[in-house]
Length: 319
Ligand code: ADP
Image (tube, rainbow, N blue to C red; front, side, top):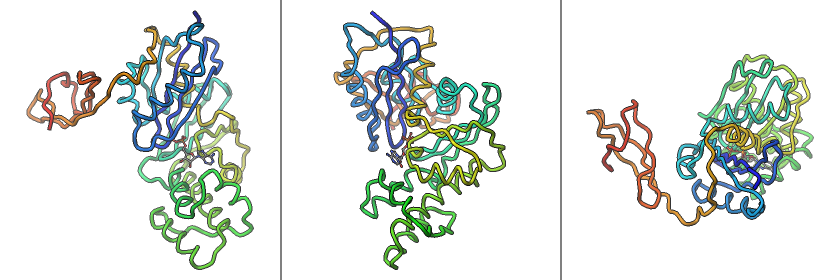
């Protein structure tokens, strides 16, 4: 039986899953919206991945998990490798583009820049505090205009006169933009203005003073927005590469890391048979009684995290 490796990227907007072989070829991939329920979305992704591989011929022997819910899902899947997105993204991108110097990622609720020199990450920045530079802002605006987010780019590309988004706070910007529809502005000009705002926000609050060198690779779901790619190219004054698997780059990276793990164990795809439940508790190891998250698989405690020190372990009380 040939061995395969699975990478799961649990994003706030999409869960991405990928399975690779020993040569890092992508055997199958699938993504689905997280919809506020990462456990459910991950189960669906894994069951879909399972459908696409021949389990008589292959077995998955290692699992890597990254993304904002990586701890929870890492525990649920008993993953061998659990790493943050900066690491996974760097590994994935450098595999496809070994000479990459700048990695940009704009996802649903955060945006990142990673500066690479000779295959080593030398600097990075991440913006999670405001969704201004991210897909969720576009998604929410599109929803309010009754447009599917995947059409934003095509509509924005029709604009001849994009409007200026002056507010630095995107909550106010969104209201302002919606108000402009009532005033009679064209939808394409409003969407182009919103896309420009996402790019400007990335330049001003993520890239900041960092020197951007080529090749530049743009990952994350927002890289599917061609208008944004073109406008970022204009702001940076450089060409940008977008891979057809750009949204999967983190999942690909963590699958490669899983492949390199020394601990191999056949992954059981019977994930629908168990129930995962999280409960808030207090650690009882000292007088701080930190509030912690506990994870139960079929009512058995399998993991906990969240306290300020290392004393955590199986001594807690539910709040
Ligand atoms: P996360 O990892 O934070 O969940 P992703 O990297 O998966 O985020 O990107 C999600 C975002 O990508 C969405 O919020 C959406 O704005 C954007 N996106 C996804 N698919 C498309 C598409 N086909 N066209 C335009 N934008 C898209």
